[in-house]
Length: 297
Picture 1 (cartoon, one colour):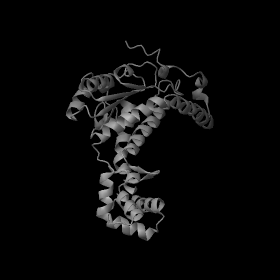
Picture 2 (cartoon, rainbow, N blue to C red):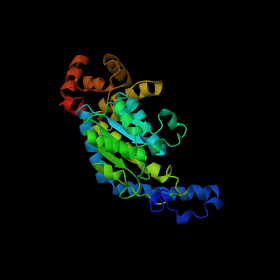
Picture 3 (cartoon, rainbow, N blue to C red):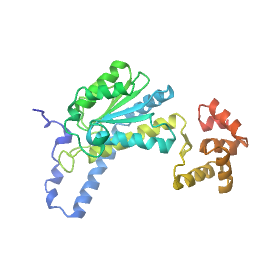
Picture 4 (cartoon, rainbow, N blue to C red):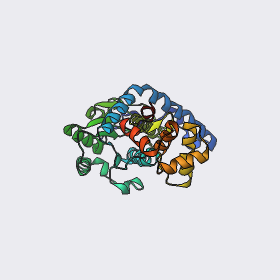
């Protein structure tokens, strides 16, 4: 039988022993208070997060991928972060990938037993064509999920970079990774419900890793999403606004530049600021490996 008694994520929170007697406002207030501990816990592991960002950036620059692996809530958070990268940063949906124990169906409905497999993640990583250019980031609030342990172990054998994110100190998945990120958020408001504080901590860290690495490969100019994809009306307007903010041009000028750049916000910005045509702007961006600041020099 698995001994969960020593895991911080499985302890009872002494401040919520009467959770079932609280009013709605007391429940919300208590949860909000407990969430403050998440920010403090994540702050403690920022040096490790920074290392993960550096590793991920290096892999992407070499043509590798970020691959998240996890089960349950942790797996869903990885899939979510991966799904949000293409529209935000204009990257291929193959650049950041999320694997969840049990497959896509497990995103909406739990697939019992999948997280306990010691072969499933390895098979899925093989199917993805995992290589030493990639980075595999394992997620498990408990830090003991077999699906993640064996996935990280396989990744290390292939020479891929590895990162583990868990909410218990000295976890099992941490032993399988080059960088271990362990924000200890304390016992959950609802005992063992790691979709709460633990899930929030993991989400915060994934935000940092994906955003930080995308900044590192030139997907951001100043604090603007210069590779945003114009897939709906809101994003069309956002693209225009980004051009206006970056260059000080009018909306009509932004529209004209974006049309000339065939929708590329990054190209349109360089065209306006360098007062050049689309081809010249693209050449400048190509020489600078897509980094707008470098293209403008």
